[in-house]
Image 1 (cartoon, rainbow, N blue to C red):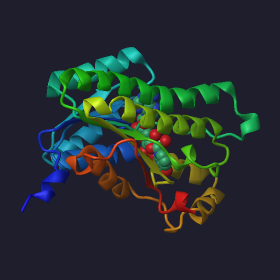
Image 2 (image 1 turned 180 degrees about the vertical axis):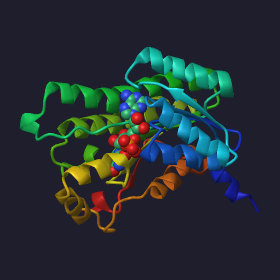
Image 3 (image 1 turned 90 degrees about the vertical axis):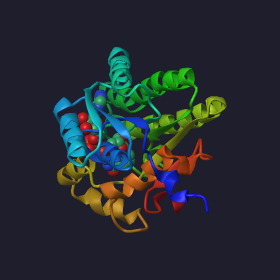
Length: 259
Ligand SMILES: NC(=O)c1ccc[n+]([C@@H]2O[C@H](COP(=O)([O-])OP(=O)(O)OC[C@H]3O[C@@H](n4cnc5c(N)ncnc54)[C@H](O)[C@@H]3O)[C@@H](O)[C@H]2O)c1
């Protein structure tokens, strides 16, 4: 019998996770490390990246913390250079770093628009392009996971015009790259969560408590996502278990987009 359990293993693989200092990126980096990958832990907050790397080391995994602002091309190149210097290759990219900055559309400033588009869309593009170049040159394929959101698919998350536009862009970019890079066996998929209990959402609920019931009303499973809910989908997309999956938007949303 073929050993199908091995399909989910990340042993011998090297990955880079952006936004890995907190929330979903941290969970994804830790999960990938537990499944055997060496992980470059990238964040603008170097202390937070170091803490994630420490947790991974304490669990017996391999991690390299790297400070990088994902909006800056020179910093993106340098981060990838550091990861390649340590690991010699990258099989996996998880472009997770992102922020929200809400305001009703009619009040949203250009600064708010530009900042969210820069981190959530330009940052994803810069990492996809640079890691994609490496994967093409190396000739061994790879798996790219981009962080979408239900906000990129439906109009329910009000006050979020900048964020919805960025996430919609990430989903469109994911589909385009999946087709363009299929010839290199580089798979490009997106994860699209509803609201998860991370600092991003906890801060919002603390400042506007009524948002919690609004979120929950739209999630058929009736709860917020927890960090552990994102790990399986990310490990699946990173691993050979998803070797025929590309251009997919994996909704991790408790049914949010199903109704
Ligand atoms: N939490 C949710 O409910 C939810 C839902 C859908 C999508 N998402 C997406 O998941 C991703 C992670 O969100 P989270 O909830 O874990 O947020 P978080 O605030 O807990 O973590 C985001 C991390 O990104 C880092 N970061 C911010 N700007 C950066 C930059 N310019 N360069 C590098 N790193 C930067 C932060 O330092 C932080 O460590 C984001 O793309 C977010 O849009 C989150």
